[in-house]
Length: 164
Image 1: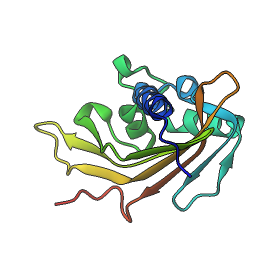
Image 2: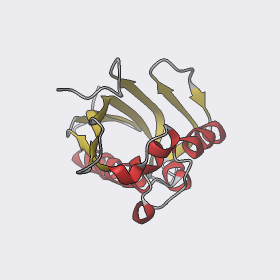
Image 3: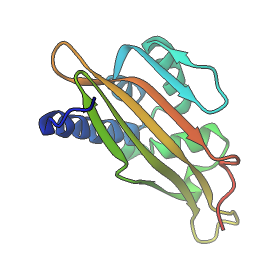
């Protein structure tokens, strides 16, 4: 049964904002600080990634350039991993508010997202859109903070194909 504790719901929503900011910075260690030690990440068509060390390897790969946001981290780092020149695109992320609920020491947040790479003027390329649904199950830690216990993401059938 879900709780009507508005303080817990507000705390989980605040955590979600911090998680999104950590993701945007493209810093694997900052993002990893949002995860519980025994967390699990499940992505479309992939085996589950279990534990903080394995998740660290994932995010070090995803953010291979290890750049801060000011240095073009985040989505631009991922572009480099898939062979795009991040300088050729303008990067935006759209996330809806989704839904947040809390029951005791567990909460969940789910939302839809779209990462969009728009070619800059003069670049002969089509827009790239990666979209899907993200689910975070968070668990209250002994110190009262919230951490990701499970992250699950789905992606569209062909995430590199822009929608017309």
